Image (tube, rainbow, N blue to C red):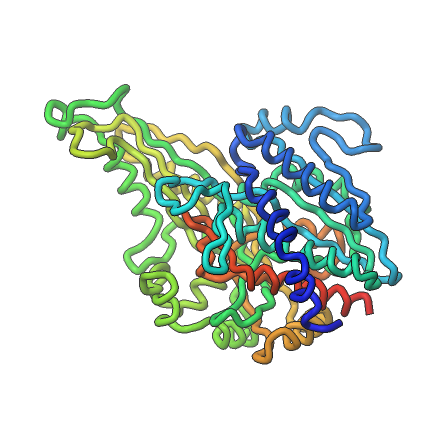
Length: 478
């Protein structure tokens, strides 16, 4: 397989490829928002229509049941009983029998995106893709609609050229950004259908200088919403100041209690059983981790968060975190409004590493918050996601050796190994039920600003995803 194959295909079909990518980007598939459930269903239907001409048998699986399964209580009823308000977003399953027997590849991706807020900070409409200076701007342009479509376009290029392929299975979901709730619950019933040899995902990043990287580990994730309430309604801060408990001030103290002065986590029991990396993993991570100066230049601030007794790479790859994602209370408009707010809300997420048990860390976090609830206030925990564990993959995996060879053909610098601080919660589950060896290679970069306003993805990065798909699938078929 020529390394120019995918780029030549893109050049020959540029207008059509971009338009199909843009069609998917125009759908506001915020999977955590019940108001966008219809858009998520439309995205699943669009992807079904996209895959079928390539020879895929495609099914859209929506709760409560799978075809051939004994009827059971609807999953949405089960979720409501647990206080889980996430909408039941559909899952797409597809399979294409290969021309080369023996090898089966399972590809995972997600069509949901992060909320577009704050909308005012977007320079272009978040759900109207704009091509500017070689980059496509839209929510989901990279994460994950760009990398997902790049990979699948590579598959289409191979199919249209008649290149023999391994058997391909595809699972695409619409809740990765909020915990993969539906796919996690359906997974046991899908075990036989998803059996594979290699599990591929294109939802990670390159190394410094966009050097290609194999992700050998991801942190797990969990999150929750904390609400502090005090007075029955907002109070005049002059009349009641110094008398009534102030939820905004109380929340500030509560959140500050999560960490010690040196940045380390202060929640009792949260960091128990953390498994440190091996010396080989640490050395390889350091070699591809970049410098503090590079980080500051890319992000706009120095890497001084977290526990200060550990280096930047260790903090970002191998240690757990507790982060405040948002704080809301009182008045934030122009001028002033002198009130004691009646409530304060915070969004909190945690990243987990191997050795940590999600139920145990979640319980420790909630226990800490309850124990430190300020006097005179009430604490409530909602929007909970108990989480998925972190994992690290064996460096001796044969599929890693093959991937190194392929990425070396794409870039003379060769491939780095990275342990990303981000999470793809469902990967651990898919790895377990499919029996497949995970292979996580993506082409994102800090320039893409995923999860932020003005998210974008370079056309060159899109073509890299196509090239990776064509070369690696051809290698696996061989």
